[in-house]
Image (cartoon, rainbow, N blue to C red; front, side):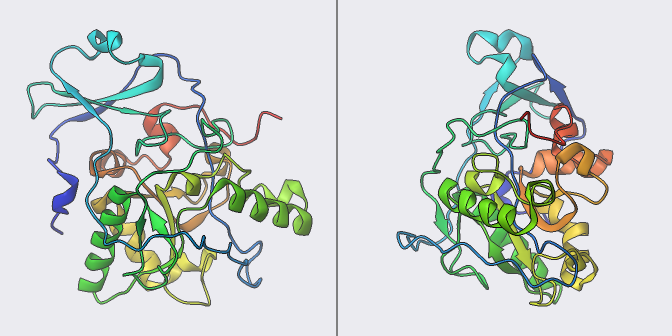
Length: 294
Protein backbone atom coordinates (compact mmCIF):
# COMPACT_ATOMS: atom_id res chain seq x y z
CA UNK A 1 0.00 0.00 0.00
CA UNK A 2 1.47 3.44 -0.89
CA UNK A 3 2.87 5.48 1.98
CA UNK A 4 1.16 8.82 2.81
CA UNK A 5 3.01 11.81 1.37
CA UNK A 6 2.67 13.93 4.51
CA UNK A 7 4.80 11.56 6.54
CA UNK A 8 7.93 12.12 4.44
CA UNK A 9 8.27 8.39 4.71
CA UNK A 10 11.72 7.64 3.30
CA UNK A 11 11.61 3.97 4.17
CA UNK A 12 15.05 3.41 5.72
CA UNK A 13 17.12 0.44 4.69
CA UNK A 14 18.51 0.51 8.19
CA UNK A 15 16.65 2.02 11.13
CA UNK A 16 17.98 1.57 14.65
CA UNK A 17 16.91 3.25 17.87
CA UNK A 18 19.81 4.38 20.05
CA UNK A 19 18.95 4.89 23.69
CA UNK A 20 20.69 8.09 24.70
CA UNK A 21 21.30 8.88 28.35
CA UNK A 22 19.37 7.61 31.34
CA UNK A 23 16.47 5.27 30.69
CA UNK A 24 14.28 6.43 33.55
CA UNK A 25 12.80 9.57 32.04
CA UNK A 26 9.86 11.45 33.52
CA UNK A 27 7.00 12.09 31.12
CA UNK A 28 3.26 11.43 30.86
CA UNK A 29 1.19 8.34 30.16
CA UNK A 30 -2.28 7.34 29.66
CA UNK A 31 -5.03 5.64 27.97
CA UNK A 32 -8.41 5.88 26.45
CA UNK A 33 -11.58 4.77 28.11
CA UNK A 34 -12.99 1.28 27.76
CA UNK A 35 -16.13 -0.64 28.62
CA UNK A 36 -15.13 -2.18 31.97
CA UNK A 37 -16.07 -5.71 30.96
CA UNK A 38 -17.07 -7.59 27.85
CA UNK A 39 -20.79 -7.26 27.30
CA UNK A 40 -21.02 -4.13 29.48
CA UNK A 41 -22.59 -0.99 28.12
CA UNK A 42 -20.14 1.40 26.42
CA UNK A 43 -18.62 3.93 28.80
CA UNK A 44 -20.05 7.45 28.78
CA UNK A 45 -18.12 9.99 26.76
CA UNK A 46 -16.71 13.24 28.16
CA UNK A 47 -18.55 16.34 27.04
CA UNK A 48 -16.66 18.00 24.15
CA UNK A 49 -15.45 21.52 24.80
CA UNK A 50 -17.66 24.22 23.40
CA UNK A 51 -14.52 26.03 22.27
CA UNK A 52 -13.53 23.39 19.73
CA UNK A 53 -12.58 25.21 16.58
CA UNK A 54 -13.52 23.70 13.23
CA UNK A 55 -10.65 23.78 10.77
CA UNK A 56 -9.61 21.51 7.90
CA UNK A 57 -6.85 19.03 8.77
CA UNK A 58 -3.49 20.46 7.87
CA UNK A 59 -0.07 18.93 7.79
CA UNK A 60 2.02 19.77 10.81
CA UNK A 61 5.57 18.85 11.67
CA UNK A 62 6.83 17.07 14.74
CA UNK A 63 9.64 19.14 16.27
CA UNK A 64 12.91 17.59 15.17
CA UNK A 65 16.58 18.41 14.84
CA UNK A 66 18.59 17.12 11.90
CA UNK A 67 22.37 17.15 12.05
CA UNK A 68 25.22 15.17 10.51
CA UNK A 69 27.81 13.12 12.29
CA UNK A 70 27.98 11.43 15.67
CA UNK A 71 24.70 11.70 17.63
CA UNK A 72 26.62 11.88 20.89
CA UNK A 73 28.20 15.11 19.68
CA UNK A 74 24.82 16.81 19.92
CA UNK A 75 24.72 16.93 23.71
CA UNK A 76 25.64 20.61 23.61
CA UNK A 77 22.35 21.45 21.90
CA UNK A 78 19.90 18.96 23.44
CA UNK A 79 20.14 17.05 26.72
CA UNK A 80 20.65 13.43 25.75
CA UNK A 81 18.74 12.25 28.80
CA UNK A 82 15.66 13.74 27.17
CA UNK A 83 15.84 12.22 23.70
CA UNK A 84 16.01 9.07 21.68
CA UNK A 85 17.95 9.21 18.42
CA UNK A 86 17.07 7.49 15.19
CA UNK A 87 19.83 6.97 12.66
CA UNK A 88 19.26 6.13 8.99
CA UNK A 89 21.71 5.31 6.22
CA UNK A 90 19.89 7.41 3.62
CA UNK A 91 21.15 10.86 4.60
CA UNK A 92 24.85 10.31 5.23
CA UNK A 93 24.14 9.21 8.80
CA UNK A 94 21.76 12.10 9.38
CA UNK A 95 20.33 12.00 12.88
CA UNK A 96 16.77 12.97 13.71
CA UNK A 97 16.11 13.68 17.35
CA UNK A 98 12.57 13.63 18.68
CA UNK A 99 12.03 14.39 22.33
CA UNK A 100 10.43 11.78 24.56
CA UNK A 101 9.71 14.39 27.24
CA UNK A 102 8.26 17.29 25.25
CA UNK A 103 4.50 16.69 24.82
CA UNK A 104 4.60 18.50 21.47
CA UNK A 105 6.70 15.61 20.13
CA UNK A 106 5.09 12.52 18.58
CA UNK A 107 7.55 10.42 20.59
CA UNK A 108 6.57 11.73 24.01
CA UNK A 109 6.38 8.88 26.53
CA UNK A 110 3.15 8.97 28.49
CA UNK A 111 2.44 6.12 30.91
CA UNK A 112 1.96 5.37 34.61
CA UNK A 113 5.61 6.09 35.38
CA UNK A 114 5.89 9.18 33.19
CA UNK A 115 3.30 11.93 33.75
CA UNK A 116 2.93 14.85 31.41
CA UNK A 117 5.05 17.89 32.16
CA UNK A 118 3.45 20.30 32.74
CA UNK A 119 0.56 18.33 34.19
CA UNK A 120 -1.97 20.82 32.82
CA UNK A 121 -0.52 20.69 29.30
CA UNK A 122 -2.88 21.83 26.54
CA UNK A 123 -1.79 21.29 22.91
CA UNK A 124 -1.83 24.33 20.68
CA UNK A 125 -3.26 24.34 17.17
CA UNK A 126 -5.54 21.33 17.54
CA UNK A 127 -7.41 20.41 14.35
CA UNK A 128 -11.06 19.43 14.17
CA UNK A 129 -11.96 15.91 13.05
CA UNK A 130 -15.45 17.01 11.98
CA UNK A 131 -14.85 15.62 8.49
CA UNK A 132 -14.60 12.08 9.85
CA UNK A 133 -17.47 9.88 11.01
CA UNK A 134 -17.98 10.54 14.72
CA UNK A 135 -15.42 13.34 14.65
CA UNK A 136 -17.68 16.28 15.49
CA UNK A 137 -16.24 17.95 18.58
CA UNK A 138 -13.08 15.83 18.46
CA UNK A 139 -9.60 17.22 17.82
CA UNK A 140 -5.99 16.09 17.32
CA UNK A 141 -2.67 17.74 16.60
CA UNK A 142 -2.36 18.77 12.96
CA UNK A 143 0.19 16.03 12.21
CA UNK A 144 -1.94 13.31 13.79
CA UNK A 145 -5.14 14.62 12.19
CA UNK A 146 -3.58 14.46 8.72
CA UNK A 147 -2.35 10.93 9.42
CA UNK A 148 -5.80 9.88 10.63
CA UNK A 149 -7.38 11.19 7.43
CA UNK A 150 -4.84 9.14 5.46
CA UNK A 151 -5.66 6.08 7.57
CA UNK A 152 -9.41 6.56 7.00
CA UNK A 153 -8.91 7.07 3.26
CA UNK A 154 -6.86 3.87 3.02
CA UNK A 155 -9.54 1.95 4.92
CA UNK A 156 -12.25 3.34 2.62
CA UNK A 157 -10.19 2.27 -0.39
CA UNK A 158 -10.32 -1.26 1.02
CA UNK A 159 -14.09 -1.09 1.49
CA UNK A 160 -14.19 -0.08 5.17
CA UNK A 161 -14.99 3.07 7.10
CA UNK A 162 -13.45 4.40 10.29
CA UNK A 163 -15.32 6.25 13.02
CA UNK A 164 -13.85 8.34 15.84
CA UNK A 165 -14.87 7.51 19.40
CA UNK A 166 -12.60 9.94 21.27
CA UNK A 167 -9.51 12.03 20.54
CA UNK A 168 -8.03 14.92 22.54
CA UNK A 169 -9.17 15.04 26.14
CA UNK A 170 -8.24 17.82 28.56
CA UNK A 171 -6.78 17.17 32.01
CA UNK A 172 -10.10 18.09 33.58
CA UNK A 173 -12.07 15.74 31.32
CA UNK A 174 -9.67 12.90 32.04
CA UNK A 175 -9.80 13.54 35.76
CA UNK A 176 -13.60 13.46 35.78
CA UNK A 177 -13.69 10.27 33.70
CA UNK A 178 -11.12 8.53 35.91
CA UNK A 179 -13.00 9.49 39.09
CA UNK A 180 -16.22 8.14 37.61
CA UNK A 181 -14.60 4.77 36.86
CA UNK A 182 -12.94 4.57 40.28
CA UNK A 183 -16.28 5.30 41.95
CA UNK A 184 -17.99 2.64 39.88
CA UNK A 185 -15.37 -0.12 39.82
CA UNK A 186 -12.81 0.66 42.53
CA UNK A 187 -9.31 1.99 41.89
CA UNK A 188 -7.57 -1.35 41.34
CA UNK A 189 -9.89 -2.39 38.53
CA UNK A 190 -10.44 1.07 37.04
CA UNK A 191 -6.72 1.68 36.64
CA UNK A 192 -6.33 -1.30 34.35
CA UNK A 193 -8.25 0.65 31.70
CA UNK A 194 -8.38 4.31 32.76
CA UNK A 195 -5.49 6.71 33.28
CA UNK A 196 -5.16 9.27 36.01
CA UNK A 197 -5.14 12.92 35.03
CA UNK A 198 -1.80 13.97 33.47
CA UNK A 199 -1.04 10.31 32.65
CA UNK A 200 -3.32 10.08 29.61
CA UNK A 201 -2.13 9.98 26.02
CA UNK A 202 -5.39 11.66 25.04
CA UNK A 203 -4.19 14.84 26.77
CA UNK A 204 -1.29 15.08 24.30
CA UNK A 205 -3.44 15.20 21.17
CA UNK A 206 -1.43 12.31 19.70
CA UNK A 207 -3.96 9.53 20.47
CA UNK A 208 -7.38 8.55 19.17
CA UNK A 209 -9.94 5.84 19.84
CA UNK A 210 -11.58 4.46 16.69
CA UNK A 211 -14.45 2.07 16.08
CA UNK A 212 -16.47 0.35 13.36
CA UNK A 213 -19.77 -0.69 14.98
CA UNK A 214 -21.70 0.52 17.99
CA UNK A 215 -21.72 -3.02 19.38
CA UNK A 216 -17.93 -3.13 19.72
CA UNK A 217 -17.27 0.56 20.32
CA UNK A 218 -14.34 0.79 22.79
CA UNK A 219 -14.59 -2.94 23.45
CA UNK A 220 -12.11 -5.71 22.83
CA UNK A 221 -14.44 -7.35 20.31
CA UNK A 222 -13.38 -4.52 17.94
CA UNK A 223 -10.28 -6.63 17.27
CA UNK A 224 -12.45 -9.27 15.57
CA UNK A 225 -14.38 -6.85 13.38
CA UNK A 226 -13.25 -6.12 9.80
CA UNK A 227 -11.90 -2.68 10.68
CA UNK A 228 -10.17 -3.98 13.80
CA UNK A 229 -8.33 -6.61 11.77
CA UNK A 230 -7.48 -4.02 9.12
CA UNK A 231 -6.14 -1.59 11.73
CA UNK A 232 -3.93 -4.31 13.23
CA UNK A 233 -2.48 -5.03 9.78
CA UNK A 234 -2.19 -1.53 8.30
CA UNK A 235 -2.12 1.21 10.96
CA UNK A 236 1.70 1.19 11.01
CA UNK A 237 1.80 2.19 7.33
CA UNK A 238 0.40 5.57 8.31
CA UNK A 239 2.45 6.19 11.46
CA UNK A 240 -0.01 4.71 13.98
CA UNK A 241 0.45 1.89 16.49
CA UNK A 242 -2.02 -0.03 18.64
CA UNK A 243 -0.68 1.44 21.86
CA UNK A 244 -1.98 -1.18 24.31
CA UNK A 245 -1.44 -4.54 22.60
CA UNK A 246 -2.78 -7.92 23.61
CA UNK A 247 -0.56 -9.39 26.32
CA UNK A 248 1.26 -6.11 26.96
CA UNK A 249 -0.28 -5.05 30.27
CA UNK A 250 2.84 -5.87 32.28
CA UNK A 251 4.70 -3.30 30.19
CA UNK A 252 2.09 -0.67 29.36
CA UNK A 253 0.03 -0.88 32.55
CA UNK A 254 -3.24 -1.25 30.65
CA UNK A 255 -5.21 -4.17 29.30
CA UNK A 256 -5.68 -4.81 25.60
CA UNK A 257 -7.25 -1.88 23.73
CA UNK A 258 -7.34 -2.67 19.99
CA UNK A 259 -9.16 0.63 19.34
CA UNK A 260 -6.64 2.97 21.02
CA UNK A 261 -4.19 4.28 18.42
CA UNK A 262 -1.13 6.42 19.05
CA UNK A 263 0.59 8.43 16.35
CA UNK A 264 4.38 8.04 16.41
CA UNK A 265 5.32 8.76 12.79
CA UNK A 266 6.02 6.36 9.94
CA UNK A 267 9.71 5.87 10.68
CA UNK A 268 9.12 4.55 14.18
CA UNK A 269 5.96 2.60 13.37
CA UNK A 270 7.82 0.94 10.48
CA UNK A 271 10.69 -0.07 12.73
CA UNK A 272 8.31 -1.51 15.30
CA UNK A 273 6.45 -3.47 12.61
CA UNK A 274 9.57 -4.83 10.96
CA UNK A 275 11.28 -5.79 14.22
CA UNK A 276 8.18 -7.18 15.90
CA UNK A 277 8.20 -4.60 18.72
CA UNK A 278 4.74 -4.36 20.24
CA UNK A 279 5.07 -1.60 22.86
CA UNK A 280 6.29 1.97 22.69
CA UNK A 281 8.21 1.42 25.93
CA UNK A 282 10.38 -1.22 24.27
CA UNK A 283 10.77 0.78 21.06
CA UNK A 284 12.06 3.86 22.90
CA UNK A 285 14.06 2.00 25.56
CA UNK A 286 11.83 2.76 28.54
CA UNK A 287 11.31 0.30 31.41
CA UNK A 288 7.96 -1.35 31.95
CA UNK A 289 5.38 0.78 33.77
CA UNK A 290 2.68 -1.57 35.05
CA UNK A 291 1.85 0.56 38.10
CA UNK A 292 1.91 4.10 39.41
CA UNK A 293 4.73 5.02 41.79
CA UNK A 294 2.19 5.64 44.57
